Length: 318
Ligand code: UFG
Image 1 (tube, helix red, strand yellow):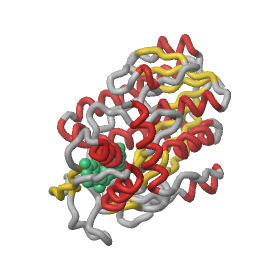
Image 2: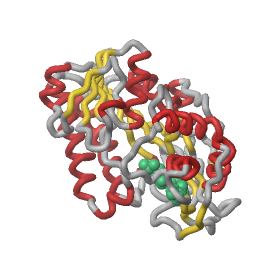
Image 3: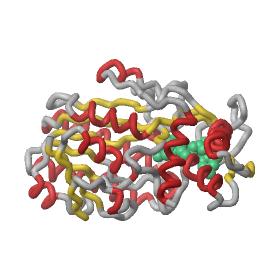
């Protein structure tokens, strides 16, 4: 299939681009390179530097049969202090992309949604029919796009899938996390193990969990990529499907730190700090729906394996 990958120079978008190329698809990446890296775009894919707002001429030129949409601002903390950036890029930027798709009669899309659309869960594991009450602007902006896709499917015959990612980690095809502003636990812990950062601050150890630290559902980026390829052809015209993507197993911050020490063989000094605002104690996905509908099965569910892939890829870059 001829596909356009919006945000294909970022961490997840670049890995999915590599998986698409391996699957025989023809790929053009659209990315404004505001947070992505041109050298992360796998050779074999074209790269056009443009924003979502300026995507119309690119789609007119490429004439894709489907779009995979990863392009977004994704820092929860920043979204609380600069909400305008999140409404502009994530919501009106996506609206521009959907209109650019309509103009070339491309109506198939896979969208990167997030666990942050649910907010503080009433119960775990979280299913897709759980209430959506985001606690930050980032989650609210992604939820707005999910609603947009529901209405574009109903009114304009779009075939759409929203994939709600939980905590994506690991590396594949030599591509891993490389954020200028790093806020995620595993890459930070690996930087400490590598000696490029002094210590890891654990944000609170007084949560109602077995060891007092927060529990998250870490999903390997390669398993996430598999889900995108399955989702690409799944919906019929007029259908918008929503799927959670997680391992279904939660790991605590302390367990992640232990795994990083074990895999790297290096000390990881930790400091226990205050809770981070807006962090729920536990976020674990029920991914039963995508397993049942699309036959998706995560293959890399062990924490040390996820951490090892991230470590080896980061080390190869140093
Ligand atoms: N943590 C620390 N120290 C750090 C960084 C993180 O203790 O230096 C803890 C956090 O408090 C949290 C866990 O590690 O308990 C994971 O934190 P991340 O920042 O790695 O990931 P989040 O769970 O906060 O965020 C993820 C996605 C977001 C998404 C969110 C949904 O990365 O995009 O889940 O709530 F919005």
